[in-house]
Length: 82
Image 1 (spheres, rainbow, N blue to C red):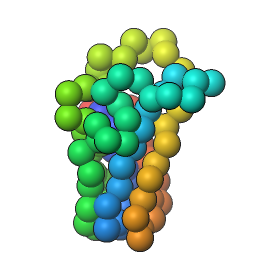
Image 2 (image 1 turned 180 degrees about the horizontal axis):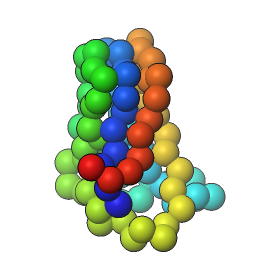
Image 3 (image 1 turned 60 degrees about the horizontal axis):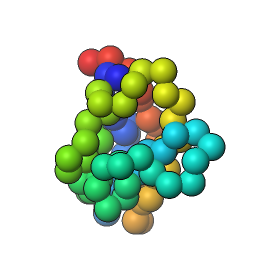
Image 4 (image 1 turned 180 degrees about the vertical axis):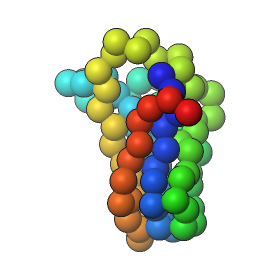
């Protein structure tokens, strides 16, 4: 999987959790607690996790993303290469 970016974001702090579609619990290493929080105002903010990478998830896996945002907004999300 390629890079994953929150686009046009304004936030005090934001986190992302990733799970397989239809499953309640996040994938190992992809919980809110594992996510390196983003804060600020950016047109492209890369989502990063402490010990996991999106590239480690098989490309055929259907995912659900959950966003947790403190006093902010995400105007777009980009999922793709580059």
